[in-house]
Length: 62
Image (tube, rainbow, N blue to C red; front, side, top):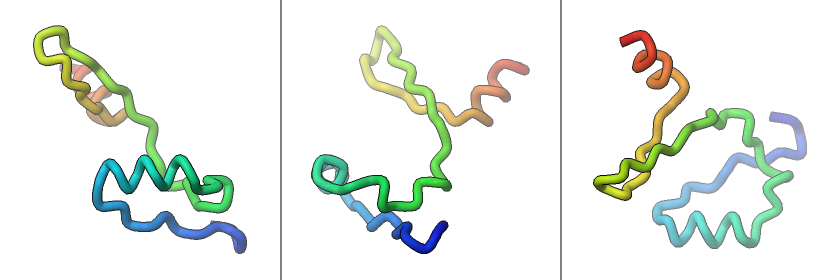
């Protein structure tokens, strides 16, 4: 984290997160700890499922 970066605040709901992203200047926050994720939507449930890169690798090896 460089001198100008701030840690992200604790957001306890989707509504708080949506408001924060809508109004915050994200360039002022340290986002270096974020990990890319993939969303998969299954036709039966229509619910998005998150999958981390490590989980995707394990699934491909199975």
